Figure 1 (tube, rainbow, N blue to C red):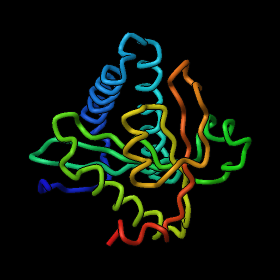
Figure 2 (cartoon, rainbow, N blue to C red):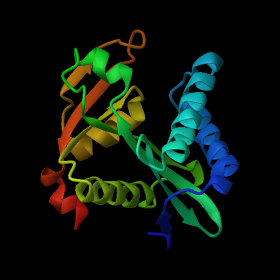
Figure 3 (tube, rainbow, N blue to C red):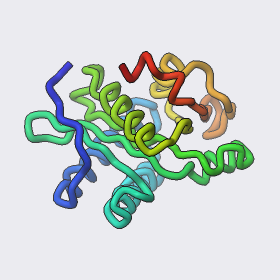
Length: 184
């Protein structure tokens, strides 16, 4: 694995983090074969930007980000906050009140190098420190879904064709104590 530093973002990281959001989201949509969905891309980017601003405005209370640094460059991000409206809607509010882990982004040139795993382990530790024992996570991207299924097993909610024919949405509920091997 690369030598990375994981830390809280600072306000001066905003532009570089926003660039990371754009780079990863555009790359993801392109690799998923939906790169022409410009409005969806823009909406996803804007949501991540709002989440980051929420972190800064609340000093990490409403949203809590961590970033991964390598060679003076932000190469990854992760955050947690309240379960999204989408998760609450799709679970008929069964996950309302849970924290959601999201924005697990690794720069395309740095994927597959253990950065995502390091970010996840760091966010698990943060959640534990705050007494949070379980969280949820969702994905509508087929490539990410394969990673999450390998890591967390079958989703608790599988919404077939949610985003159109062949584009499912998956939602997991994860108990942190089940991840002890992951964290150590």
